[in-house]
Length: 250
Ligand SMILES: NC(=O)c1ccc[n+]([C@@H]2O[C@H](COP(=O)([O-])OP(=O)(O)OC[C@H]3O[C@@H](n4cnc5c(N)ncnc54)[C@H](OP(=O)(O)O)[C@@H]3O)[C@@H](O)[C@H]2O)c1
Image (cartoon, rainbow, N blue to C red; front, top):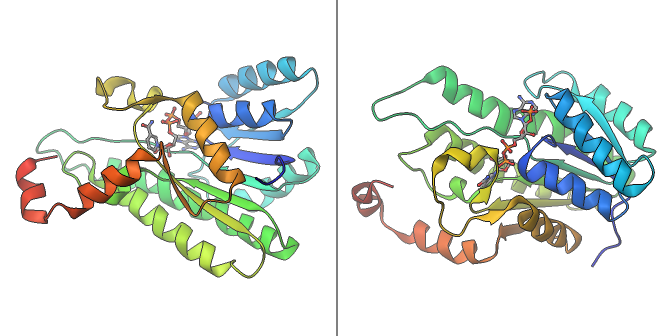
């Protein structure tokens, strides 16, 4: 296992998995930059982290990932504030599930803007910075939802499939520079995103997910299913032929 991370940036740190990751990393002694839109939430989380640490370990930066020209400068500001940067996690995401018969282009495109284009706008400058330094870890929070196109959330599925492909390509681009790129594919996690979806099979808490994700980051996993049993489930789901998948209506 690699040493703990010294300085981390979590984009999408104001709730759910990103918040749990920020808290866990700070608990290991990492100085963490928390990025999201909701300033009050970020400040509350930072206050709690800093009180628990007995020193300032969390720093907040309000940012909307739709503002894709901001990451290069914000990245420099964050690294200067933290005193370095060796881990960046892109956890920002939204889920939109259309009603039967609803085809809402505006909402579908917003899902792609947040889950995919925001990730590219952040992780390109991060990769450039890390490649020049010759080290650093980049983590993208994908989803098992990206492993198959489903009737329930087409743009979400698409965003996560494309994110996984982008992360694979990024990993290949920086493979000779010492930079590590980790793709995380959680199954169901109990967070505000899934709060309205009813009972979800095998759902884990955000804390448990964060603990498993941090472990896999330290081990420099390429693609980590969270928890690991989803790898087998995903393999089985991908093996179902299209005609049958369509009839199952999932
Ligand atoms: N929960 C699950 O079962 C599950 C499973 C697989 C993958 N995931 C993925 O895990 C990641 C985290 O999801 P979660 O379940 O923790 O959801 P969540 O609790 O709703 O958190 C989403 C985070 O994304 C941020 N975000 C959304 N839109 C943003 C924007 N325009 N600009 C900046 N930040 C934005 C939110 O912050 P603000 O609203 O404050 O901006 C929040 O911090 C997502 O990528 C999601 O797709 C979740």
